[in-house]
Image (tube, rainbow, N blue to C red; front, top):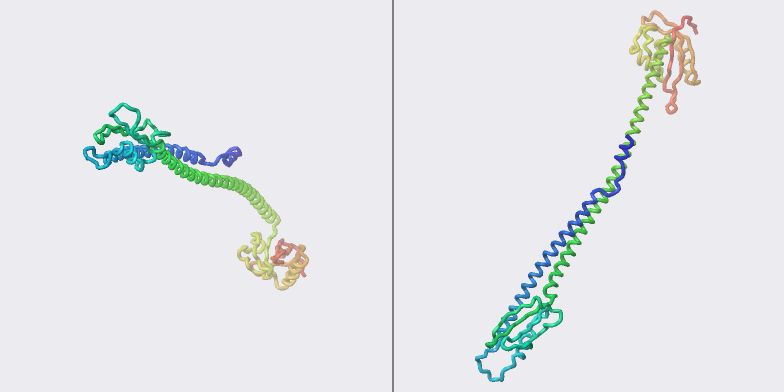
Length: 339
């Protein structure tokens, strides 16, 4: 029994439900990583689409502003390298490099090259063959890594910051709830221990009560047996001398039932000449606190006979209220002494 109680009331070592915040954090990391990759790929696709649009815009810009070779200008013709430089100098985005080569002659010298060196990514170059002024040119654009990867990196960073903040908040709240649940579990364990101790104490008190009740019953039965064996009549009077209790032996003494005497004044059962003697005896028992003895007759039920008895009187005193009554034993006396 003790081992089962100790196992029942053992304090939990770990917080209950600690796996929940761990699961939240793990799931949050996994979901954030997947979402970050998806958003980074989407941002990369959007950046590539933008890059294609910029490349095509440069091609259209070249074709739209190329000089007409059939016209006869009044001024001398501007060199191709010069007007190309002027055409794209303020139009080309900073994240792109531009190179224009002619296909008419075998030369490695481009007609125009702007920003096509440095950290540009040649593997992602876009080439378009154009024919302005009846010449065959190759327009090549080269994107910088920042154009395509910066958007993906920024998107991934935004998703990670948001995801970490969300699952950190959820994990923190869950840890707080687990901590409160842990304290509540400890408190419940303490209350259960106190309840078990109270139950044991109540059980012990009930056992003691049963023992005391049995002892009291035995004592009352012993007293009744002694009274019955002695043949004495036991009276209990209040402070005014009224009868509150009388033992059943009164039926054999005065031929009266105990219930018939309840509430009567004992002096009414004593002949008038002996009533003063009874009052002095009660007063003496009240003042001295000792057992007083007096011999006097009691009136029989038929009112014609008197039964001589010996009374022993003890005053009952309460430390708070003072006199609370009298306890009297009456034993038939063959030789009645007259006062």
